Length: 322
Ligand SMILES: Cc1cc2nc3c(=O)[nH]c(=O)nc-3n(C[C@H](O)[C@H](O)[C@H](O)COP(=O)(O)O)c2cc1C
Image: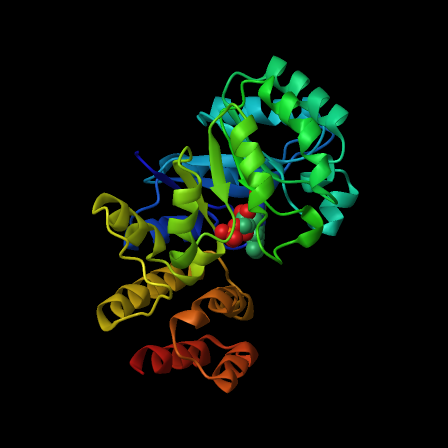
């Protein structure tokens, strides 16, 4: 099976600048979904949101723009704009669990309302010309919400469904619910992308459990472990499970991580003008990267307090020199 690996959309982390730099240093990822852009309910666009997506058209791997919203007409208007700009497919977010999003009936806030989803898909598909994929949770408050949706989803030509098998109310906590996933794999008719807690230690179990799935979306663990996708690919092509339970950076890989880090800092320096904001942006990635290095708690705490660029670089030098 030709397994495809996807980079998950992660707002504030996997934006175009990050993706561009990531793909220069690491391989294994075949596709990406962009972090969401919000549709404007009054169809007033918002050049900035669209312009922020345009560079994705020239990335080295295909990027599908993701849209968050619930008004199908405004959604279709945005999809048609994106098509005119050159995008060949789009994704609708039915998974975001943030309270502000759910309270407006968007993201996973749509899942308890099969009628609304049906109406949304009905109108959207009558007005758009390019393929539409769906990214979803397995319910907002209860897994019972997902079952009435299966028939509705199967009735439309959805290009693929990306499933993160957790309830919206669980946010990112607790185990993924594989029993509900089993049902969806058996009952949904379109291609399925598995998403949720894929790591070196879980990939083979999931790959064995879901023989019919050949699309895998990697999120937080790809940030923590940037070699994850390339090692999964090597492992699959050699037919050997070379993935160890944990990932440690050896010297050679530390050189790659350092080069990646420095390129990312350079790229953001060209975009973020305020020093503290630039340092803040880089420090946010360290909430993932800290697991790559044997950092002590006080070192992490110290980094959190840094606001000046030269202090940040000094701190990074010490981490990489150790
Ligand atoms: C900081 C952060 C931002 C995210 N932003 C988005 C987003 O814009 N759109 C989306 O569909 N999912 C978003 N997600 C969810 C991820 O795409 C993914 O579904 C989730 O993290 C589970 O996959 P993982 O366990 O591999 O991380 C975000 C998750 C995190 C942690």
